[in-house]
Length: 119
Image (cartoon, rainbow, N blue to C red):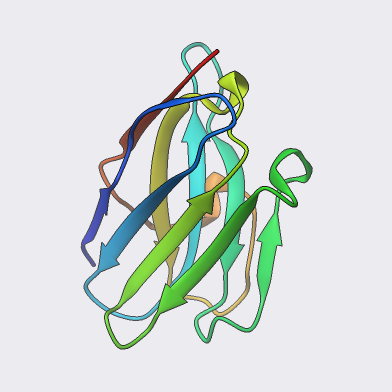
């Protein structure tokens, strides 16, 4: 399983950014983030079909997770970004169908992409 994250960058507070994750197949997938000094945190997850999604409370209404199964690619559209959203964003995949929020339950990880939100 190979995962390749892309699309990070620098954006002003209130702005938008979309990150992508290209996978080598179809899996249950999630986005996690890790800020310096913090543990890796679940951000959003999506089932293999795309029918089920889950978000951490702090991003609900601002972030949207989606996937294009024809391209084996997952996206995270981030709107109304805040400085506290600054982190390295990682995509992850797990073989099981169950959508979970615990990082240790994901077997495969991409390399991460840095998102910086300036105030």
